Image 1 (cartoon, one colour):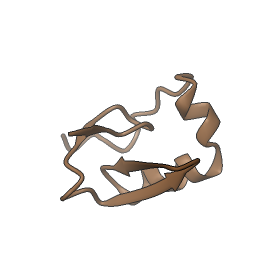
Image 2 (cartoon, helix red, strand yellow; image 1 turned 135 degrees about the vertical axis):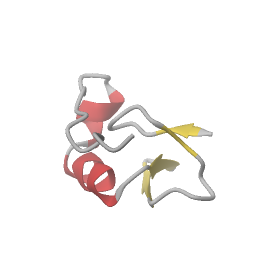
Image 3 (cartoon, helix red, strand yellow; image 1 turned 90 degrees about the vertical axis):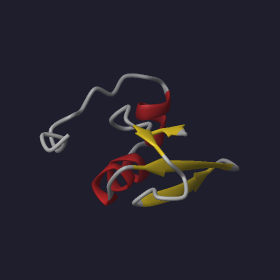
Length: 59
């Protein structure tokens, strides 16, 4: 399992809704919206400043 860097959810790479390669590392996301947020500012999420959970009410 991989951790979604945007929302913190655990994501199965085989079933991930989206993935994105950044600096040689592939990151997996639970939803396309998380990938879009990560693409805009990956350093923000990798530094641990993020805490967005607005679109995960369905879990």
